[in-house]
Image 1 (cartoon, rainbow, N blue to C red):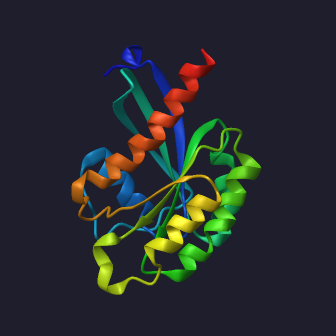
Image 2 (cartoon, rainbow, N blue to C red):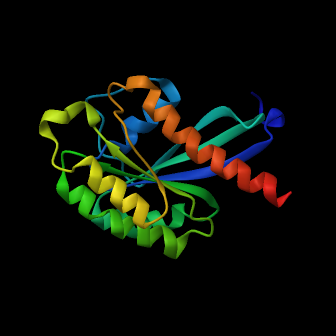
Length: 179
C-alpha cells in the first residue's frame, strides 16, 4: 500500500520493562522474524505495519521504546499523538509484571488516547513461567483492557498479529464513530 492508499495512519507505542521482548514482537509483526541476539533498544525505534481493519487500509507506525528505568522519562515523548499503547511483560519475569501498573499510569498520564492492550510475552517458555495467566487476565479486567499471551519467538497461531489487530480494530472503530 502506498501512503495515498491508506484510509488511516496512526501511531502505536510499545512499552514494558527491558528484556520483555518488545523489539522481537515488532520484528515478528513487521518482518515475520525473530532475532535471538537482539540488543537493548536505546531511546526508540519505529517500523510501519500495514493491514486491513473493518474494510479500511491502515498503516500503523509502531514505536519500540527502551525499557530501562533511566529511559522511562524519554518514553513519555513517544506517547504524543499515539492512538494506542501495547504494554508487554515477560511471563518468566515477575518484576516485569510488577511494573505493568507503572506503565499503565504512564499511559494514562501522557497519552490523550489511552487505547491499551496488555501482552504477556514468551508463552513458549511455559516451563519457566513465573506469572500465571490468571494474574494477567485479572489485571486486564481491573483496567478494562484487552489481554493476550503471545510468543514473539514462535508466533503460534499468529498470536502476535491477532493481538495487534485487536488494538487496530478498536482504534479504527473509534475513528469511524467520530466521523
